[in-house]
Image 1 (cartoon, rainbow, N blue to C red):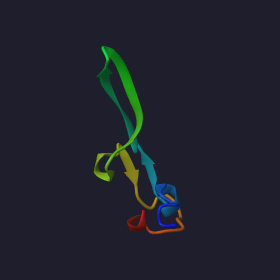
Image 2 (image 1 turned 135 degrees about the horizontal axis):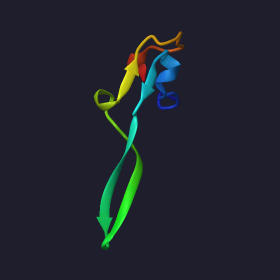
Image 3 (image 1 turned 45 degrees about the vertical axis):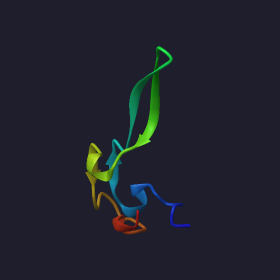
Length: 60
């Protein structure tokens, strides 16, 4: 159940840039892999205490 709530919005935070894409070449063709999760330190925006939350950000 600890993996159920992973969105920072439940902790009262606003986050942008949590996922990214990567371009690779496979069999001579370009392939874009989307939805790769980034480390929290690499997120573009993280506004802690943006609104009232249900959980602490440390639990996410």
